[in-house]
Image (cartoon, rainbow, N blue to C red; front, side, top):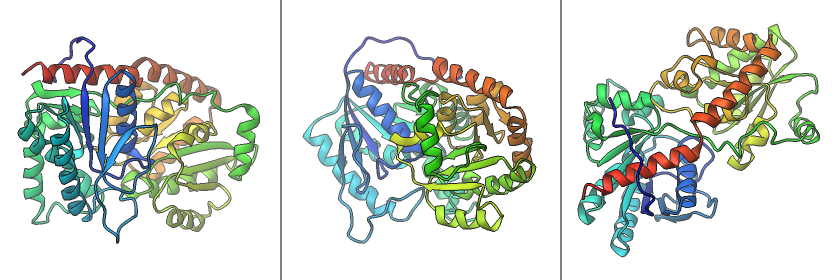
Length: 406
């Protein structure tokens, strides 16, 4: 049983967020960092974010970047050896920051951030809150950066075990992640606070485009007027299920030629575009490349059906909440996180395969009226259960709890 939160007085906190990533980039963990920071700032808290170089400034947030190196200016997605020296530079930046101004709370994202934050917490006597979005070693395996049979696997797993014990509190992006901490890493349930991923339901909403704007955007991306549109928004990679999605798309288009796939995201867009053309999908699939987060609602509004083919069993899947808020009926593989968000309203592939994914998509495409009704109910669920207003209050209560311990 994870710790239950109780209401707390509305106190303003000086929060130092450590984000060991090139914030902001338009994917995954960056969205959670952004929405948390904006929500907490709007609630009256002071938010300072320490991040790698090369990200883009957004939403008027106070982002302070560590030093970079002249030979690496690209945005790093996932595990990378370049993070080793960037983490050292970020740690030095953080050290100077906490001695220049003592924060009330250190809020660390990702395991590298929690490791840096632990040292700062001990030096300055400031409580550390770890915002966990998935297993460190499992992510490395998903990104083919580490193999289970590698000599480095057990030491890194041990390091992850230690880092999970450093903070005063661990915020998890799903209840499934909280269960993993308890059952696989032996963490105390009393320090774990599930704060599932949320969505800005005012920004992501079904009516974000007028009929004229929708038609103009469809024309821009070469989507024929008569086609039903299946949308995907996220990273393009095998652990995200991109290859399986394109194989499934071939089967769907064969059964329903009036279907078009709008695939939005990066990296590897050119690689997957070529793969889709090799599958015969050239006239039925559009690859937009990177879509700025601010433009995501407008592009998702083109969809009739959404798909979330992520295979990873430990990471979150925030894109599902964006789909839900847009009122999009959603197909996913039956992972614990997908089931946690979608519940009985999701359509699940019976197994992790292209054939099963295609069959699930066809279930919705064959019944557009039923699909629209399912999408409307998912929108209601997002508003009722997954708004960032609710998420911000939960995080504020975590701050109150760890600061009251003295």
